[in-house]
Image 1 (cartoon, rainbow, N blue to C red):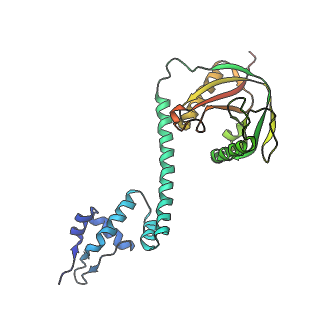
Image 2: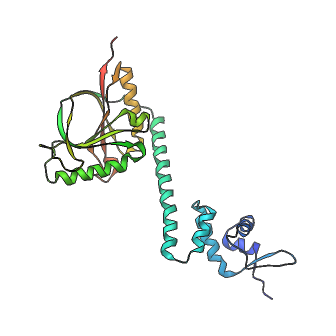
Image 3: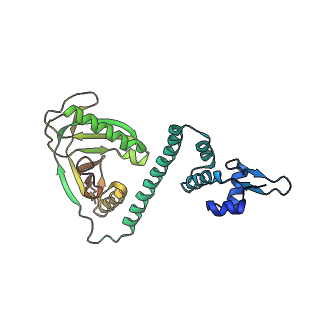
Length: 269
């Protein structure tokens, strides 16, 4: 009688170790086609090879065993695609966080030749079209996108009087939640939904331009802060960001230019 493939043969064909196959059997993920009641030897059928390969690929993507079991158990292709897609999105988010950390670390370890090109610049008071809110730090990006979309819809074809920008309260960085204001400079800002005219006060800013994606923008923030301390200045108010070139202007992150401005005043000696 043909018993099928031994566990060793099946391991060789699927590139799964014998130990792994035994673990999958014990967890009910991939049971042998038959088990000899006398010897306890496991035998597998050739039709189980594709299933084993699917499991192998999913485990290479760090899909938990419980989720692998759900994927194998469902016969609905759309449900299966949703399960796999959800895990892939989590992986992509983790990869993005890892990439951002690597970029920041490389920037920190790179010698800062020639110093930081900081400019002290007075900024006049002005009225802009803005959206304000209190936001959790983890939600800033999504909140910003929604707010800018509202501004775009409310302003229509009004010509801009400058690049868009944002003000970020210190509490957002120190406590993880704080006031955020994003704006577009236009003449006669309207009132429409959350979009309202806002008077931005005059300020003295220590300004530097961050070039490229925002993965390592915290490094530029840190270097600007060190420059402020070195020049006996103190921060006075929310951080100003001006998006000279951003995702709305160029899809290539290498082309992005973000101006960071800290309102400052000179410390008494």
